[in-house]
Image (tube, rainbow over all chains, first blue to last red; front, side):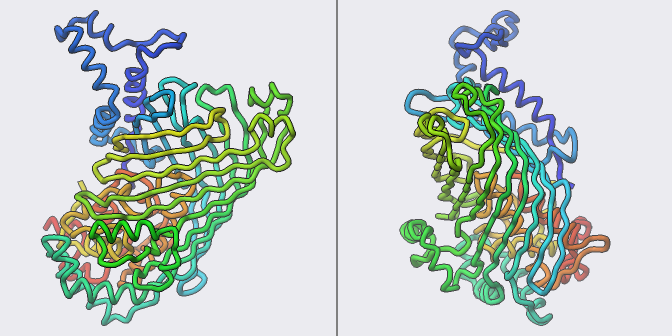
Length: 392
Length: 123
């Protein structure tokens, strides 16, 4: 069983209250760190020191490190375990805001069966919750909160070819020797590594994974004045060419720029696209009930509508670094309403696209660029991010 | 804290499996501390991350069998794959914890010959 740290939710809430202090345009009385410190006078801090403390508390790196300490506190086990939280600065053209993003996904039920040597099928029932919260809701450039359930069937075929017992024993011997390597260069130059990878990769076949499911979700913006209920069907597809020596990997044209970067960075001795970096695709058709969407209600177009959705993600390793690898990552989300009313189309609510690309190091430092808007966000933004990410 | 030792077959086989699937690129000594968020399948996009994790878990399951492993008593493919997916989808879980979980699900080839589970490493 994995360990959960729901207590982190409590600290996250406290941290969030601290971070949000002093934010203008908020009518609700708030806890202010400076007031607390000055009134209690427990530390004898001067105004400059208090200001420095407050500034430090607003840095994503500081906040994430504080959250990270909570990993040592396994308050509860179970359902909250697959929770990821990040603090980051989101910088649009007109403002910069501190954001807390969260995502949680839990398989409540999972069943699978094998129909042959390399084909598996099954189904799973899943709960999800995800979104981004910022100091000021009206400046949230990722203003979409989603919560719901899905029931998915899946099948996977391809993958591996069985190995005889003699080869299995030989691979154990090889990995015993490989495990003693003192450096990555030593490992990858060793004859044991070459023999092992040749043996393994020679038995790997392209794997195709297909999933089809039904989902129900509540979508809302942070201020909760725009809400809509969504029911739909989604088709997901993931193809991986696990053997890097396979010619099929060369067809992954999306990865050519990354392949060139790997070559230029010296992490690969030739320009070779990766079959592991083939983008993953999820397509869907949703029925959306926008009865609680204040904007659509104001337009007089609050009847349910159908929309097409697409999500694509891509990630490719650029170079090994201590603690992991330097990665290039890109993602696209697209929404388009079928047969929108003229007033909806005129208001630009019939379609939205959100694209993001980032380069991230294993120490948590990342730079990212986002362009577009999500369905309940009223403003198209270009967002530059420089952040430090630690999740728990 | 999960045990990460060359004396544990589950650790070594999990490492070489992730290495072979190009999810990590690190020595055995360094691999144990690598978090799931640093594996190649992990993506910031929630919709596709789950799809990628499930595909990877199924592939790992097949490679463990290619390497001669069998399910532990009371474990079947659904239990094993679901457990691997649960581990893969926690960004801060590390490879050592994934190996520890795999050790409870699979009887790896050679486990009982000095390359056993965490209990053996402690001995």
